[in-house]
Length: 68
Image 1: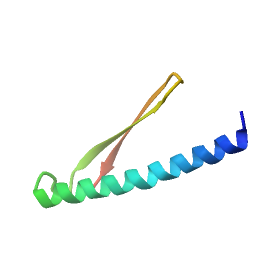
Image 2: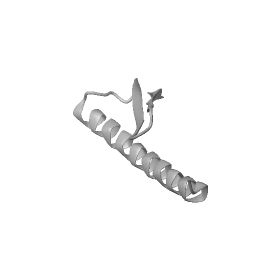
Image 3: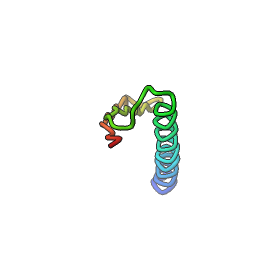
């Protein structure tokens, strides 16, 4: 295995996921507030799942996001 290439690809994936996830969360919250489903004062739960094909990985991370 080429460790350097693997680390570069992994950092690229994590950066892309982080930026994309943040945008998706911000947009979902904004739309939730605009539609009235959210007030902007509550706490919402975010959940992310990481799966890796060919490896026995199924990682779920949950976090409460406080809007106020």
